[in-house]
Length: 441
Length: 136
Image (cartoon, rainbow over the protein chains, first blue to last red):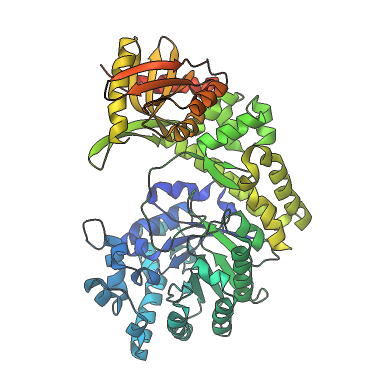
């Protein structure tokens, strides 16, 4: 039972990480449509040169135009360049919304012709934008014909964010777009994207309404994204709702379901323990195990270390406190047996536990904040690289473990993590490790 | 830092400079910031400054135990709470009493050498401090 491992493209600076620890670790890459609209040539080169064996999916991000108009504008009020390019690709009704500084509404799709034209442009963009850029890439001459301009893994029908109060308004539009997409698509698979608030997870009637409306459409699969859902802090009811929704969309394995922003809980859900409630899980390089639907500012970066037993990234300081309290930094051997023995940790420690400081190294800079300068710390490039490589190695291990270990072993791993760490982190710190097995019962 | 705390810091800086400390303000440390790092010889004293909220200062001090040689709370209340003194003594922290209006500071409790620090992290702090300018 293999859990397909997808990685979300964030920035070009991260592209080398898509083959780490090995290219075979990944099923494919998810790319946001605004990036495709803005930098098709760069992304074509990335796909051809860095990840030639990868499948790719373009998230059409049609939900971006539903939110408060400020969400797609810069602080000076200009529409973000990449979003503007995407709006131009999609045409009406998106362009009117962007120009008129207003939200996209269900009534914008009242006319059938509008739905058909918009859906056709959205699918055509996904099918051809990168494929065309790949065809004109200088790398193409070194590749076989099929490798040179592969279609996306699936085309994603236009989709809309649905909260507990808006599902009834948007679901019919969603459904109509999906029907049109299925009618327009050639031999490429068509997916839908179910992007919902956490409130929807808690409302059984809404989950059922969504599944009932979508399961008979004939879609090959779904992308799933729950707004800002942190699996480590989510309640039992929210996680049960996530499983219920995913299983409904999955249709007993007849359709693919890829969680666009999932952590270890989702990986377990997609594996043996969750009886393949999802088919795959995506995350970003280091970021992206949960993500708000309306983007928020990034904040100041802090070095974070992925604690394998906790299945969570924690601030370097907290990881250090934990490992010291447990005595796991007493020797390199202890660290590798109790914390992590991945290649990156072996290389970083080089036999000396004092080198764990390399995961937290930062430089301080004066930064203007409000009306004064403040001195802030920023992780060095080397620190970010180390934390990221360690994280990606652990992720690869997690996907493999969820795919191949028995359910008993997977539960035991969580229980051992909880019992080992609780004395230092307290019940709250390990609550997710105790909760998750109960959710899968 | 609030304005009232800013005034306390001014008096505290003068007090520490007069005591031959080298003083750095708002020093970032592993994702957090400490109000004052005062160094003398090879020893680094971390000081959290609060006008009144000493409980918060104690919480912040805890995260300095990993690197500081000495950890202190500087408080600007008219009198120093007995509970603060007890808590500080129990943890080995020092307490400085600062009166903004009189611009006076004094040691109420001297800190004990922090044995909880992690030498590799302390060594890193020493390197990082060199890149941060100090008060004159």
